[in-house]
Length: 320
Image 1 (cartoon, rainbow, N blue to C red):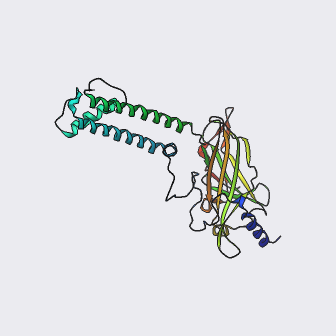
Image 2: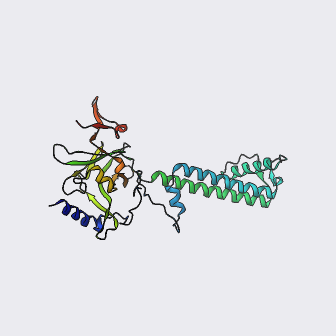
Image 3: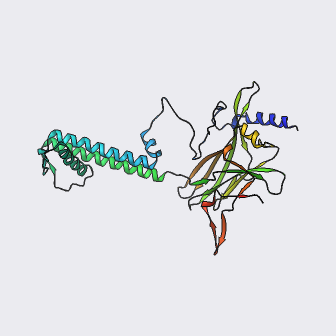
């Protein structure tokens, strides 16, 4: 079969709907990724987005979560402090006016904090119907707030997440003692938990032209030397053999760069700790490829054990 016929065959196969991961064929401009290295989609949503408070609070980063909780805590207690000041500090028994608005505010604020958290030191207490009603509402809001915060904390900790590290680079190197080359990258589990039935899919995406000469994005699944491991105790070097059935066949680095390829990695496994399936995604683009090198072996025996050096995941060696 001629090279032109092979290329045409790839174009027809990559146009098949099952090879499209959901990005469509219209994203052809720019040099950006479809999937970021951390597995998130490189998509900015604008317009009428659906916003769900619970989902947003569970999915945001821990730093933003603590910052938001702290901000809500301060704002709510500040609001109650202003209400207490409106009623008057004379209705808070034991609260002595300081003579300054800021000082009086902090007296009311810290009383609200004591009521909100149900600490109740006893130095200050509400007197009169209005002050007792506000204090009751303050305590109720505090109880409900801590209940919601506790639920969110549990949901965030119980959320199944993989800790799979991807090598920063992928290599193109000879495949064993064959005349073929191979596309390789490696992964490792950063945690000491058990991942079972870990499966991998690698899809290659590139920019091509259709029959009318219009730019389109193609997708095709790359056949892997091994696409599943029952256990994942060490690192795993995923290998795609670049043979005549590969879209990388006989491509020079210059030709491959012109294709603007992206290798989309999809992993799925069963986590015994969470008793649920976990997923991990990442991608490699042309600038992440290295030719003529190999990954350093990450494990070695030591005193009756096998040592796995996680920090070596990005270590490369020259081909011998």
